[in-house]
Image (cartoon, rainbow, N blue to C red; front, side, top):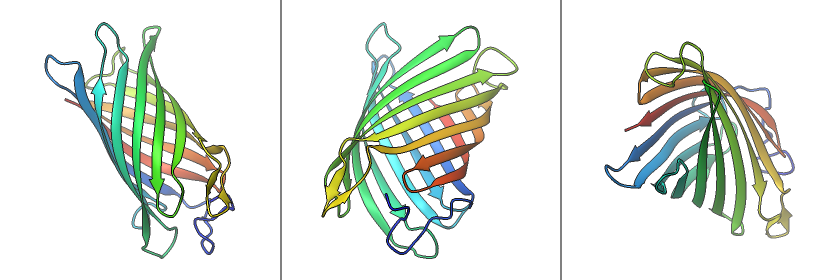
Length: 220
């Protein structure tokens, strides 16, 4: 990946528009500090048909009493496809720990700080870890709360740092893994169901690529 390729023969087209289709959910168990959360994503190198990744992630959440901080322990399975005409994929199994800290600034700026630590098992590579920090901001445009009928501006930036540089068989990666910047608009279909449409620019050591994102955010 550090050479600018997915493998030794395939060079990624930085100018080709990609698309990610996503569903996020959270559920708190009644009268409990525990819950579950997850996201299921289909990511394409193009607008559809050329699979970049299938990601299935679910975790158990815990919110200490008298706080708004949520901790998560979870598992993810990822199948990554090669760019272009090939159909082969390689698997990754991942365990992660996460802390989510929401913050409200003023009357309408909803911030969220997410810290995530990942333990990764990738095919034909050594065991790896990664650190991630995501700052997201939602700003309601026709009201003050993120609820039914509200249109809002959605922004985030997330940086990824590798825990190791040696990945086996003499191969190395940089400490910097990637950065994702996103801007979009969201709409509340219900108080607990929102949809977002936006653009993300992803920069890695191998490529920089634009991607359309369509996502549903559901709490129940």
